Each structure stands twice: as structure tokens, then as C-alpha cells.
Length: 168
Image 1: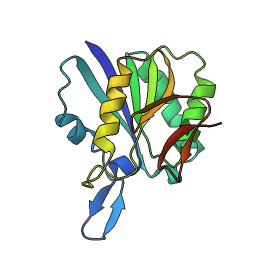
Image 2 (image 1 turned 90 degrees about the vertical axis):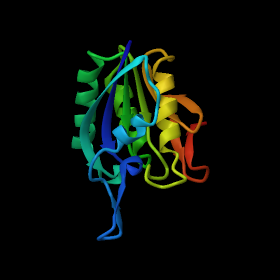
Image 3 (image 1 turned 120 degrees about the horizontal axis):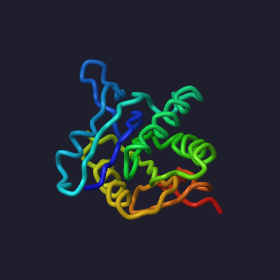
Image 4 (image 1 turned 30 degrees about the horizontal axis):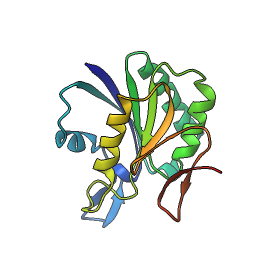
């Protein structure tokens, strides 16, 4: 049975709507709600809630925390999946690529362009694809979204296409 550790940082994928204020915010992780809808008999999944922020609000200290937790998690996992806001995902992933020269397992970033709570969200698809990739790819730093698997370095968010692409 494969051990997958999720690290959650917030971002659009985990935003929830507050009816009182009318604002989408990062209050808590929604990962368990996504996973409850999936059949994962061959996976042992655990979750580490690290930060609850929009990625635009993340700073170098936050990224250092993600780096440290990822290093710790890799010691006990067959793969690490990081839920991260898409606006600065590449910045955190590039840091991990530079600092973790030879990861012992796949480290996969994923997120969503629309919150999980929205009817047309890409969250479930992206988490499902990340889980599948986690059982198939070799160690490295990746982003998995929208039926794409891209390896760092050299990955960027394309704001026109609303997905990630290889930098040319």
C-alpha cells in the first residue's frame, strides 16, 4: 500500500464562501471532502495542514515552512502532494527544486483555478490526477493539473490559458 502525504497551504482550491461577509477565504482544509468522493483502496493517505492562505499572501517564511514540512514528509512517504494556490505555485515549486536536489519520492503540486465549492471547479479533477501521478512518476518536483504532468524547473502559469505550461 502506497503512503501519500498531502500538505495543504490554502489557495483557491481550498477557499470557502462566507455567507455573512460574501467573501471567499481560506479558513480550513477541504481536502477530506474531495477525498471522500474517491475510491482509493491501494493508498494510505495522511494530511498535514500547514498554512491557510491565498498564495498571493505567502511570503518567504511560509515557503520555508513548506520546504521543511516537505523534507520531513518525504522521509515517511511514497509521494508528497502539495495543495497550493496557483498564483505563486511556481515560486514555491522552484524553491523546492533548488533546495531538494535529489528528492527520494515524487513531490507533486496541484491546485485549482476555481474553489472546490464552485460547481464548475477543477479541484476534484486535479487532486485525482495528482494522486494517479503520485503512484506512477519517478522522484522529482512536478505540477499536475488539467491533464498535464510538468516537471520543474521551467514551469509557468499561463494566465491566458488558465493552466500551467512549460516555459519555452
